[in-house]
Structure formats: C-alpha cells, structure tokens
Image 1 (cartoon, rainbow, N blue to C red):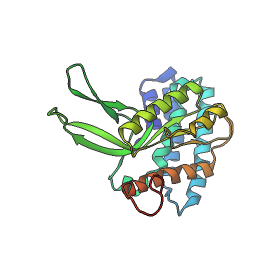
Image 2: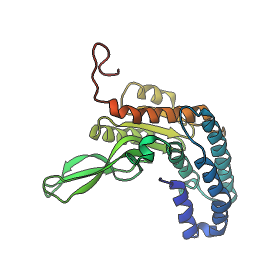
Image 3: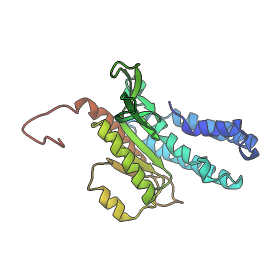
Image 4: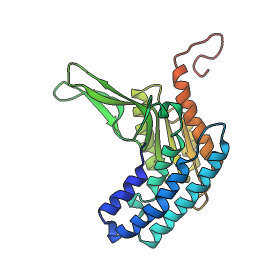
Length: 259
C-alpha cells in the first residue's frame, strides 16, 4: 500500500527538517503509528457504515494534531507535512476492496499512462503523469520493436488538495482530460479538504465530463471531516471499480450511454 504521509515524515526525520527530527520522530512513534494501526484494524465495506464514522473521528483527531504540531514548530504548508495525510486517507479507505486484496489492481501515484507521442527520433514515446492517488493495473507492453516498457493503466485517478483555487482547478482539469483521453474508461476525481473556489467554477464543471466528481471533506477550513462524505467517496470509488467489469455490456431495450 502507498503511505505518502509516512514517507513525508520519514524524509523529514532523515534530513533533520528544521532541526526537528527528534520531535517528528516522537510524533511518528507515539501518534502516527497508533493512528495507522487503529485505522488498519477497521474493515471498510458498504455493509459496515460505522467503520466510516469511526474513521472520520480518527482522521479528525490526527489531522487536528498535525496542524497544531505544524503551528507549534513553524512547519510551513509548503512542506506538505499535513496535506500528505489527506493523500494517505485513500490508502486506508480502499485497502479492503476485493480487487486490491487480490492484487488484481494496485495503488499508484507515479507514471500513470496519459497517452503516446512520436519523439524527435521517430520513436513512440509514452506520456506519463503523476497523480495523488490511483487505482489501476500495471502492464508491460512492447511498441514498435522497442524495449518492453511498464504502463500503469488507471481505473480511478484522484487529485487530492487541501483546497482548490481557480488556477489549481484548471490544472487539475487539464491533467484529468489527458488521463481520460488516453484511458477512456477511467474515472477522475478531486478530493479536497475545504472549498476555496467560486461557485460558478463548480457549476461550469458540471456541464463537462472532465471530472466525474469533486468531494469536499469539510464545511470550511476549521470544520471536521464529514463521515457521510467519506462514506460517499468510498461508495463512488468502489462502484467505479466494480463497474469496470460491466463496462462493455450493451443491452437493449434501454439506455445505451448511461445505463
């Protein structure tokens, strides 16, 4: 599984970030690891909604602690000290999906397939993008007698943000469009801590198909994460995964594009 927040903490300990290695090590040992153990003990499924309520409680306690710790030790938001925890939430929520536990699909955040192009040497070059969270399938292919290369074909790609402004939203939509163009049956999402985007941008986004959905975890910057939204996010992603197997089915009479 992909633990982005843990990697961030370990890097700061190793590099003695702002001479705070000892303090961050203490946080890692006494707060982070117990939090992770408790979250990992929960089973996330549609038949167990109470797990999402408990998860929200755990997430909120830890996230509030991170923000207080950052303020007390002058750790800037640019360090992604707290924001990487929002990225790591998905690793916990989707650990119990059958396609993940069976290794049919994997969890990734780098090198996601986003298309092909011809380079200056007339070779086929694969375009790859990094995303914050992706459930997909790793495959090895050979193109035009070149050396075999590994691709990560996305089923679900999620951009995770503390908040979104108009510029960031444009970048997210551009990245999502590339991924969907390259993998037409993939689905793209945004998961953000709180909304910092004018309503008209959201209303306009409803009229295109670049993003499948945007989930906002908190009513405002100081509100707790909402358990209902967390559960809704889980249901959306798990449904996207389960519907992959039925994506090619055509049945008449009835709807054909959005059955």
